[in-house]
Image (cartoon, rainbow, N blue to C red; front, side):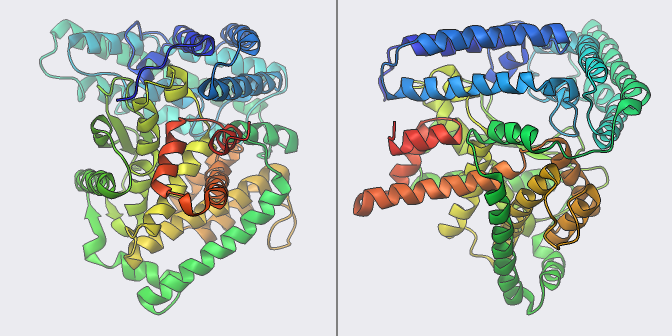
Length: 555
């Protein structure tokens, strides 16, 4: 049992920052599993934005003057300072005035939080009813910011607006999320008055989304443009935000091209073993193998859970120290139908377990295990669940911000891709089909690096025919992934509207692997992979520059 660390001045600043976030955005209470009123949303209006950044500046002032007590403080101060300073840079760019895309903007977040709200007992459903009733206010504030963007000439690309309009119609439909949630998801033993309140509040939320869709169609879209790329300066900001590190974008683009070629070559070699032919021949052989086929979402959920449980059990025996509270990982079919697969972490006391979510598109009823085995390892153990739950479990040393809110996409997604390769290294992907599927995912992530930097920086196309645009991006992605067109379309639109995020997976993996290699070089014969994993994960989430400094001790 690790002795509880005495709270330092920097810990207190970090804890106060978490409290501030919970006050300004009660959704943080839901994510953290904290008590308190969760019925409100963040204020997405320009006034709410200004209030948030006044708090950022206040926290940053306190942090800069605080004295460091030990290495844990050094990490906290370095990472939280960098996080807040970069937030101010993004604020100066006025990105929030055009913050709308098909996957990770307030348009999705206002709905997505309901997936994490507790649903046990009358009080939980009263909170849900109250929050449903406030969806309209949240979307109204968001509309004000987007309207401000129009006045400043800062609007999202029309492609993203069209995608979100379709989402508002699905959410706001007569059989959409809100209606389904308030009728089919509610327990039958709730008081009749509460059930009526839920239906009324859900109807309000449904209509609010339809009204928001009308605003997008009638006001924002006519003011928008067709330019998907955001340019080098804006892209550089977003890349740093998602990595917690600065990288040479031109060198990274060329590395991405080389890495993609390497993934393709490795995949083609395994394809020959599977079918004696091309990648397409191997796909056909695997897709026609009934032992690798799953029918229906119930069977998919059961398969996910079984594979996840086995990974926790086996890796906990030999390769990782997985504490008992961390061993519970729930696999769910998400209530949305947008095609994403994602992980949500446990609450601070583990009363809500870590969860793996699969958002299955409408009409998709068959799934292939060879494609998805590595996905379970990516989202679960040794991927996101091990990484995030380890930080949560390390509460004796890490303050709340460090164990629950800190980190970057490059740290999290880079680790998850590293974890996929680690499973191959440890012998869990020796089956040619499963390894072929892992390589398909790795090839896709390498393609993302090239596509994302290519489109947003207007780079020369790899085929030498002009510069990148959306049409070539779709073509390029189709050539490099084994996905139906519906998935390809969703993915490419995601990259176009969320600059810098998609490459953070593969770039993050590169940095994790480089860091391991450097640690092994320095430690020599004394290097222990298991001990290195524990040391790195015990740090918790950070930016990748902070991670390198902390792991190597190069203060």
